[in-house]
Amino acid sequence: MAAAIDLITPTRTNGTSTAVPVPPLFSPTRIKAFTQCPERYLRRYHVGPRRREPFSRPLVRGNALHTVMATRARRHRDGTAPVSLDADVARALPRSLYPPDEADGYDDDATTVQQQAAWGMTEFDRRYGGATVLLIEENLPYQHRPGNGTAFGVETRLDLLVLHEGGTIESADWKTGSFEIDTVQNLITRAVVGRNAMRLVTGRRFAGNDAIATSAIYVGEQQTWSHVYTREEMGEEWRTLTGTIERIIAGTESPVVGTPPWLPARSWLCGTCPFQDVCSANTVTVEDLAMTAWLLAGD
Image (cartoon, rainbow, N blue to C red; front, side, top):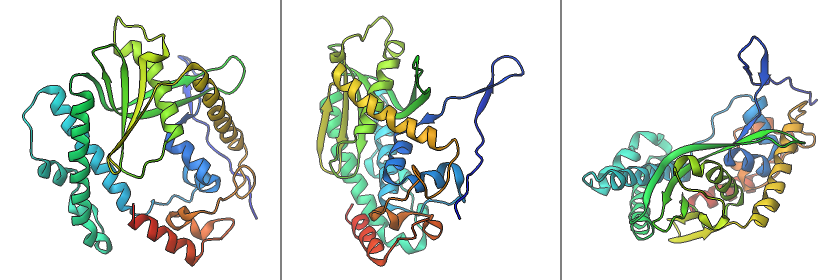
């Protein structure tokens, strides 16, 4: 039988002995986890049992690609001598990361990372070779404190932030999967860049929406997506995002596994879930696992 769970509310002191609740902080990954499967989100972030996410070759490749791109972007920014791409990939993707039953896939993954990084740096030089690099692989926050409504924070890790000669500030996110516009990631990135822009570029105002661009570089597909949000777009999409976050916050006040908003959502991701044995729906099938394996193999 499902039962309510007591959660610990994060607090901080306000200079006295009084504990002040800290507004919850959400990353794009965390928000997307809720939209993919609310029960998995609840178990992962609040209830447990604590479980390690299963080994994922696409995730390992993605992490390695980000490490390689960050390393080479820093060399570009600092004007230091180049190092062979083979060496950068070997450092970012050591064989020791792979468990014995996945070791046969290492060489293919290393080749994929090398090919994606080579194209990514070509695109970096084309788009950002003449720009000033502001940030590489750094987290930026934004606190949403409405007069009426729920306070919360969002934070995202910026792969790259540059200032172009014409004055436009642009974020870039390296993507290793298929071409799919990540609305949540892009919206939060635009929000945190807008809030922090004047701190990062002194003496420059970013009042106009045309001064901030949001981009994603799909190195696996060799495509680039770039967008300048209008005020109307930001307002509409931010209201949608706020509604999702408010549902999460309200649901964690007295969470009950398997009840709204914490219902399980069946999809191919079920085959990657570390909570399959305690899922309230208990719906993972052989077909789910086969679909998961097929999709991950083709990532």
